Image (tube, rainbow, N blue to C red):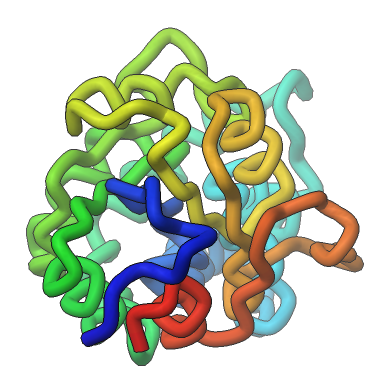
Length: 225
């Protein structure tokens, strides 16, 4: 294991988004939405239709399953049902993306601390990351602070918990809001292009410091592989 590349000499911590960055949870999210459709006598939708919206959680899944959006009549009831169904099956198919375990081990071997900042509520994020054995030094959920991403508050809270200055952190995510939040927090940012990204996403225009095509690219970019 080599030392950090000169560009990253001040780096002390790497923070990650969860869904679409560290873990592939789209199938379980889609299954929860399809269970709702089945309960209403509707045909199941293919995973490929749900997958690009995996990073949007309930909002994305309910938008695809029922064309329902926040603020519309009945949305909150659908959301409660979706979250209850998802909680019951969120461990079934969700796994870290291939190469993530080696990436995290490489960061640890280089003496870098790492954590998770997600918009997933603590109700789901804490038990799921524990069950998957991810071993993050901290997990900040979407309801940990008063604001969720793209607000910088969750990222700043993670840096505070780790005892690391924001300027010494790199935030990795698969959504434009991750880049916006990271930049607002004063952190370097990286796009996880293997993630969900969203329909018609042009992630090259988000202004991130690094574009990562596969998990192993992070160690290479940092000079650690």
